[in-house]
Length: 500
Image (tube, rainbow, N blue to C red; front, top):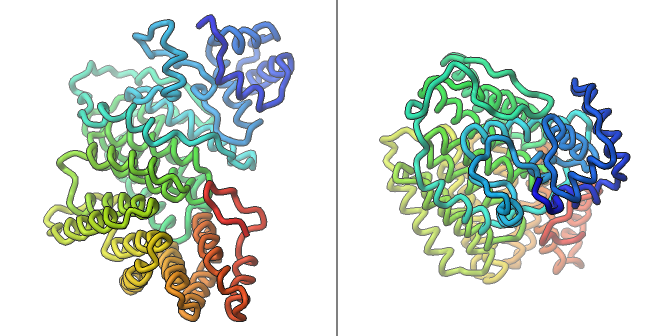
């Protein structure tokens, strides 16, 4: 008990709209459904949780997380409710409130807690999928907050498993979620199968967008979280952490692709933890770069630059030139969003130099195989198209890179092609070439029905805004009508989105 109110629980309790007596009855009912019929909670106990900061015993935090998840339609974990996990030692009594405000998730996490957070969060996410609820969002954490809490941790290597006592029992991770995979030993063949499944999911995402396979990825990640609760030999445990990192990045990217932004950010943070525990700091940096791309997309380039600074510095010396090139393109996009053309051009020049300096003598990791020359040009097109909002002379360069990207695109990258078409059409509008803009915009519209990506709708809204200056032009009027028909009836509200 902290002696002070649990403000996080109080805020969520206010959002849920329950009375304290109603919440007590729901806790008893839900606990019985989860196999704990002996639980007897009353109004006074709920009051102590909220007003006095009392932390209830297990399984109450998990029961409350399940109730709030269902009520609010977004993932709510025990930490979101302000409860401290068992096993977090060395805490001073008065420190909890101050840390909660500055670092609500208690970042960074130790390995056993990473597995527990992973399993709990995916379990709650799966519950939302099963109940058909729409994942609304809490506020995204600021890029500076994530960077400051994770900087020192990411710049050091984790302790090897062989450096810690080995036991035949699982790690003491908290049981969490409904879909807990029972901890059990697995071998190299099972891990190879998991690694192959990641490749299948990644290819599907690139071709069709994140909406159709997100649940499958989250479910696979939930099982891997349970596997991580068992201490395997070092070489297997590292590979399993790698699988977790890859699946968490995919879950985050798919969540971002369908507009579940706070959920996406949480998966990116989980991925960074998993990659670092597996000894793959370049992968951890790439995971954070995804969070930075998300921030640029949401109109928060300063947060993106904070995250990119950490991603680049924390990736370590083993980061291949092509990976560093990819990181530079994201940083350049953020700079373009701020209208910093000189910095953007300098960063893209660095990206090009790094890309061509990669001789291919070291095979790229599986998660970098999607970043090829087409992607380099696609990101350059996006950066120049973004800068063109501040400096229209950049539009012609954006067109050149977008055309090169489309020329180089291989099959199975449908979503990337749509983005290239939209970048190209948008640059043409900015360059006062509505005929060419109309051509490429229609190619984008034709392709969009084959994907389930909300990000394509967001970019399409940005392009629609640019059509406004041609409102009296008959062909463009027809295009505007087609765009209105293509967009969903209730588009998600964007931080900077243009209203239609």
